[in-house]
Image 1 (cartoon, rainbow, N blue to C red):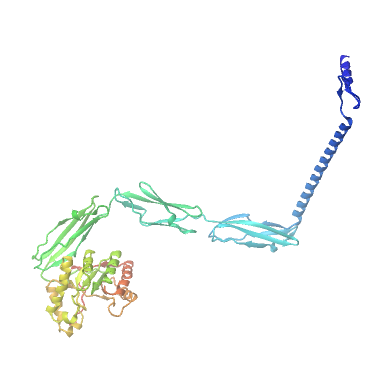
Image 2: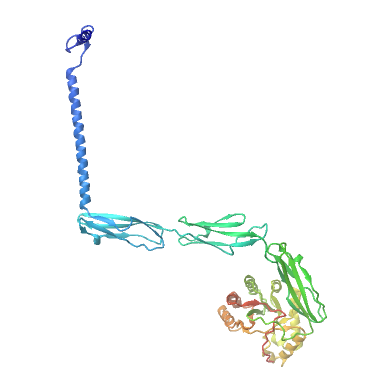
Length: 515
């Protein structure tokens, strides 16, 4: 009852008609028209949203139908093989092709293929497959990657294991890096130095890497070198005193050790016999080198003595020195590691004769004047001329040379114009005075008809023989001889010949005397 009364009170406190005046304690009620309007508005809004959603569903469905329809009615292209292919740049690209259909109709023969694949160049390429049918043009593509997976190659000059002097730095011998695609990439090589090795590594433009090591051993196993000045075999007359020509000694690690050389043996001047002088030196690592010099004291020369070295080439040069060509010839001989024999005159600068001697070549005697009329007028004239050039050589080298070549050779006939039988007399007199004279068995022709380097080269190389010692006549005053020399030397090396200089122990090659 109390609840009913309370609700009744609440109802009494609400004004039911909007135009009714409020009594004290009454509350204003809702506007029914306004409430009705809001309700209708909300119903219309929900109805509109529902219609919009339905329309969206219908449009989506239609789009799906159109897509499926188009997919069903246009031609289709299917690739044979993979859609992405990777091949090495030097391989051949083989087209795998594709197939095309329109419903059950085969359109494969209508496929147009466009390809720009270049297997000689790394890169990404597209192969386009296209079919035109009715109103439709359909395309499909294949991706071809041309790649380089080949490692570069590093080649070391010299050995991969080398000995270096203790407590020294290794001096790089050389290396080269070649990549099959990039070519020469030597400049990209990086060297990492470790305690007992150097590591060489390189990376090509595709990221392929290669490396190689050179192992270093700190030990000296190389013996020193003793170089004798003058001739290793010497002949002295009974009236001559022996004077040590000198020597030098060098070591790959210790450097110049000439002062450490010990010399044993004795030459008894004026007493006939053959004497051996022994030169010995030891480096800081205990490696020992020994050489000998043979000195023969005798009255006269035995014309049949001397060693025959078969397969040896004796390069001999007449008429110099020349300030135009001789220096270059000495350079070539030094670079190629070859010793030669120079039969000198009184012409040319002194320093070139000094250089010949210092660099280990034999300095022989040719003639002071090269004037046939004067030289071959008499025996006295010949020795007067010979002594003149001999004095020049001794002044410059400190040694008396006993190795001779006659102007024009011992077989010349021009001497008949000035003195009958003089060549027979001179040859015997040279032996009596302890000299040895040398002609030749190969003529380069450089003094008359071979005036190109090709002709000189051909004349020399075509006449070499391994069944004898080859004494080659050349002239160091000829430019074509200078130009041919290196090729002659390399031909000899490549074909198994050795190179020697004439000394007093070399067997004499002599031609038939014609006067």
